[in-house]
Image (cartoon, rainbow, N blue to C red; front, side, top):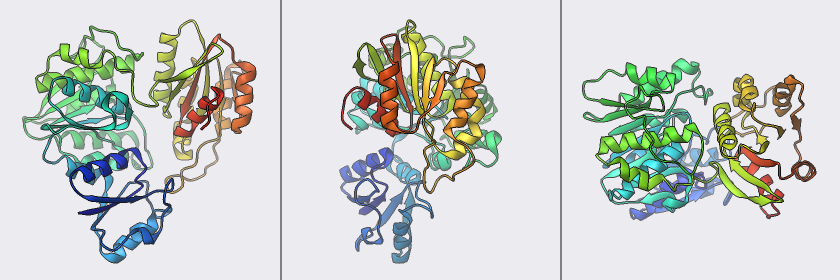
Length: 424
């Protein structure tokens, strides 16, 4: 079979491409980062075209969709392709607004340590897994189940994890939070007979949703730091700080209970786990300033990262550089950014990153977040949108009293690298 992947440089698409190749298929692909997009990429002989939700009528990749339609080539969405890949496996699907990558990695490492040799697909590079994919040949598949564009509804897992539920991806959920919760419930009801729903009892939305799932054929396990949860005891220290990561570890223990793996095996598997790429990733140190990078773009994720920083480096001040992602998301979540950055001593905010085909430019700016943060009169935030000027500002204002965190969409890590003197 010859598959062509539109957007093949994306993390999940790279994983799908590698798996398809290992299955003996021919795989080609296109992406703005490599070949660019053209109808000529849909060559004679292509038997199926796989595309992501990011490919819309307003994006460059759409010309390849149109050409595939013209040639009568089947079109397969990324989520549907992932479901096809794992359809003959016992699927452990990790869903939730936040924490999917870390939780998926922890569960995957636990199954590997238990000798179950699972297929593991995560949303970011994990050194302990050898990348984004661990090509196990056992009966289990551990995968991220993303709610974006309702992609997780293609899955019918044996075990489903719901880490938390919050407002996010509102462009795909016009009904807001009730729409999101209802979709997570629909996903949970797609668990196979005899399967298990694992959900975080500390998160009200996840707890309410999980409690409302009524099926005689599905068992439930609650986890969290609250003692009312079935799985609530984390008897070892993690390398990555924060209550959110402790909850992720408890999710891994809960899943291991469902699979029949002893908790001691989970401990051995994840006690030295240092996180995925761009998840509280330590990049280096300069003149006594430790530099950490994290992908967090939602206010809840940002607050969790900064809480972890304050926990781990309690004697340091926090300096953050934040690059907001998408105008529509920023406008919808604007009031929450003030609390998200409450632990920051000083920070720089860039202009909002525009995503062609998925976003629209609205009357909102990174400067509006600065104004919110500075309402307390402490003038902790400044708006700078030029990377060279940001580096100059950091060099002039940072000292060993601080830890520096770059937070947001992927390119923001380049600022951290350049501050450290590395070329990007």
